[in-house]
Amino acid sequence: MKKLILLAAVLIFSACTDKKESPVKVEINTPEVNAAEKELRTALRESVFIKAINSTDNLSGLSFHKIAADSSGSVVIKADNENIVQFKAYTDAKFETESYGYSLLGLEPKTGFYCVEQNLWEDQKYFLVQKSDGLKYEIANEPVISTNGKWLFVKQNDCFRMFDDCPPGFTVYFLKSGKPEPDFDAKLSNYYIDRGGWLPNGQLAICLKAIDSKDKKEYYFEISPKGGFR
Image (tube, rainbow, N blue to C red; front, side):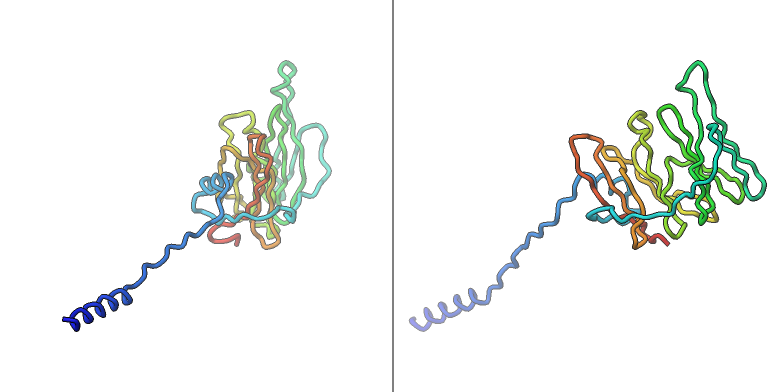
């Protein structure tokens, strides 16, 4: 009888010592994504890579070279193929708010684009004119051109502060055979683009600010399409 009791005790002890411990569940705390990044990711969907960065202090881009221009408020451009592109100022003697004029911001030699600004009563419009053939393209703002001359970053201008159908955001264009074609864009609701441009590594960087004036922070992000800025 004693032998049976001793054998049972040994078996129970063995079963207890052979029991495998359940793995401990480790909680991984990931940094909280702020509201600005959430809105940006939602706007861009899965089309690009987004990474928060510390600043946008070292941005660069190609510049429009100032050239002599008419001060009358109208702009006339003669393309290399002899085409004439005219932007005529308009003055409404009765309603000043209907008047507008144009300014030639300059020529960017690498892309061959002239940039023309239209000055409206409460808004601006911008046009790119190709030096070679005079083809004209309307964009939302003066572009920031990548240093390789292949990409345009265009932020939405401040019309969203006055018009409901003008959401804040930006568009990135790829220059295909000299023609700007939209590659991706973002339409935001609670944030706007304060500035943007090109980093030394060739990637795009932007600074977001909240439309709500209570939020004084600036939010910085590096952005690149899935295929890279080729």
